[in-house]
Length: 161
Image (cartoon, rainbow, N blue to C red):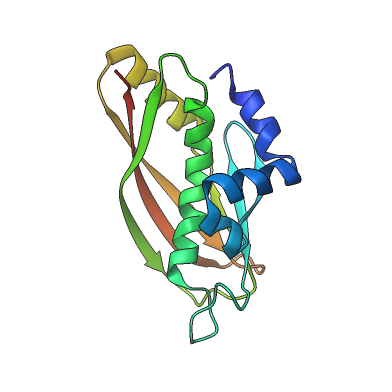
């Protein structure tokens, strides 16, 4: 595990520090109302609640807000593995595929549980010096536990020169 993982976790699991991080680095996510409900080495759960700011004309969540939450839950797992890493490792979303299965209203929880796989991809990039890729599944469920959306986020990791 990245030695700086616990430092990163201590930042994003403190509500005030998370709000500051979002405002400073991911201002769209801050204004849309994204928050981290759960975070550990394997899993990240991002919470988003339908509001006047993030809804579409059909009174459901705007698809781009769902995409932000899906990217954030896998992205926080990835960021925790590259945070203050030596050598430095870059991360990038190379692509994304989405399925919208049900109207997203109320509170939606997006989750990704591929932290260990992301860690292995980052370690491989460091070991080989080559770019590595991983596809992470981010699943959004409503308060009834019904899947409203599934996103496949294609991440790539590469050691910076």
